[in-house]
Amino acid sequence: MKLPILLLSLSPLVAWADIPQPPACNAESFFSSQFDYAVGRVVDAGQVLLLGEAEGCLDEEREGCRSGEEMEPGTGLVIGDSWNNYYCVKARSPSKEVVGWAPESRVMKTSNYYETSLTSWVAHWERSDGNAIDIAAKGDAFELSTQEGGEGAAPRVLGRAAPEEDEDVLHLRQGDCTTRVLLRGADLVVADNGQCGEHERRLRGEYHNRAPLDRLMQRLGQ
Image (tube, rainbow, N blue to C red):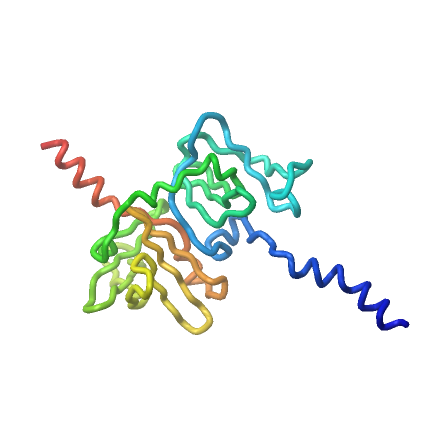
């Protein structure tokens, strides 16, 4: 009789383990915990109050779920995965770095409206802290490099990669580490699988190609 009792006592735990759980949504793991990324902004009027990671907060409204962080309309976003009508979002510079769950109705993916091609990859991509990634065409692949050691230092080649099934994603693989470089309109999002060393983790973030805007301003000034 003991065996059936033991199985019954374990079954709720097994069932709970099989229930899909939302991905982590915090500043530390944002660029390694999401399946996909987009770029966008907060829309409509009023502040957006973000939800935190407490269990069950995305299932129903309850005490203690609000993270205490909020975003203003128009705030630029990096947008991660969705869960129960919420998006995991990160505020972009110059806004304060804030990460949390925002209602889908208040989030617009503006990068979905950009048309890109293979030539869109080739650019100088700069992060808000001044770090940058240069992408150049090398035969059938793209070479990614960074400038380290100050002005005049030789570029450090990160690797070469060619788009696979999706021309908007490049993969750099080294051992267990896989770095994903995602082309999102005039922006680049760099994420990884959470198994990378410190040097690769420092690449995480969102980068912007200022060239299209600079060309537009030049035309307007003529």
